[in-house]
Length: 369
Image (cartoon, rainbow, N blue to C red; front, side, top):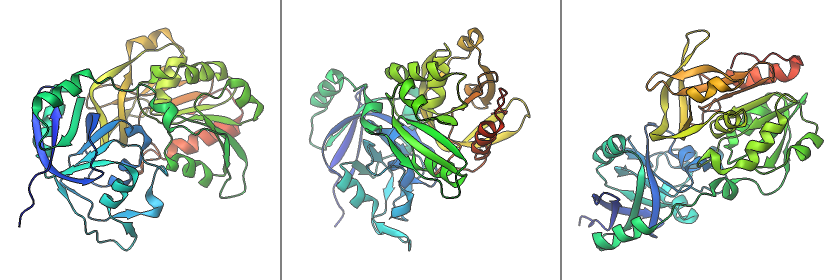
């Protein structure tokens, strides 16, 4: 007997999409976004940057290879919901320890399958990201719209996903460098990428002061990815501003935006953001094209950079947004995309090596980011 649709998505414009619930079944109001990756749903599910968001997967089949213990990007996923066309609850993979639905239920993540994701993604592309309500199929439209229009999205995402204490992650080989990583909602593979390259890493909370960081005697500073609007973390921006020129600094995604704000640039929200593993980025110095992994809603305003000490190093080929900046005299650089990938292409992993070269060199000239 065919199962009846039991869940629905209501958007702010009154449009509805129906489907079948899986994972956690509680009602939620979230920002709806889409991701164009064909693989890597586990890493997407466990990326803290998706806090308070409902992610629509453009690839139709999700769940077919299950969930592996080694592939989480955070121990406690904070994504709001996952919306898919076809959900597979019987994974085929020798590494799988649980189904996607089992993990989502355990972590309180709402799921809905059977949705016309092609139509829904076109709506997000054409009209932008906005609030959605995932609820029971019997919830009246008028009631759902009242809830949506009265709900204020939270603005404290970074403080919820960042580490609450300072902790240490030792190198996997004889260590030669010490990196302080400012955790704004970091992915584990950033940490692994540094540890594999001989870096001892001290992870500090998002609001750690520059005085505390200096007392840790780092060779370099990493600013991680994370969720939300970068202007919501003025404490982190002020810390980075105070650290400029004292140590090499490398920012990733939200870290790129924070570094830019620390130099006096501005940021703005994109219509539907960049999320997926297929975003082409041009290196302005070499002309080389990198296919990158991305996940962000905000971008650095190009015009605002002219009043700062930063120069542009990379641009997005699809929409010409800023994808990388640097300040040579301060040994600081950042990229909007994810060189640690996970999931995604490996084109940009070399940036970690350049950060290490910069820390080892002891010079005031930043390597090309």
